[in-house]
Length: 174
Image (cartoon, rainbow, N blue to C red):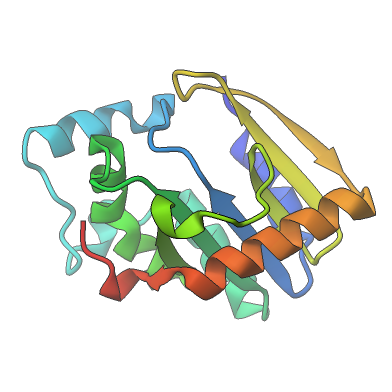
C-alpha cells in the first residue's frame, strides 16, 4: 500500500515556495517500481533522449510546481558502495532533474555527526513535515504529518546540513 499520488499531489501543489525531501534508506520496496527495477536488473536503461518513454505523472507535478516558483530539492543519504536499489535509483534520477528537482547525494559516512530524524520526510514551506514510515524491508507503512515547530526545526536543520555536505547529482557517480 502506498500514499495515493492524488493526495500527495494536492499536498505538494499547496507548497508556496519550498518542498524538500530527505531519503535515508538504502532500499525501498515500492510496488509501482517492481517492473522497472526488474527491467533495470536485466540491463534496461532509460534513454534521456526518449522523454516520452520515461515521463510520468510525478514529473508533471514537479514541473508544474517548479514552474510556479516552488524550489523542489531532494537529498539522499546512501551507503557506499551503494545498494543495488540505489544504483537503480541513480540511473533514472536524470528524469527528476529534467522536471526541475535539484538532487544531491551524501555518502552515509559523511553524515556522521548530523542531527537527523528517524524517518525520511518531506518538508513543505518550513511549516509542514510529512514523515514517510517504512518497515525493515523498505515497504511503505504510512505517513505522519505534523506542524509541530520542534519537528519542523529538526527536519529543516537536518535537510540543510545534509544539502550543504551532499554532492550534486551530476557529480555523483555510483
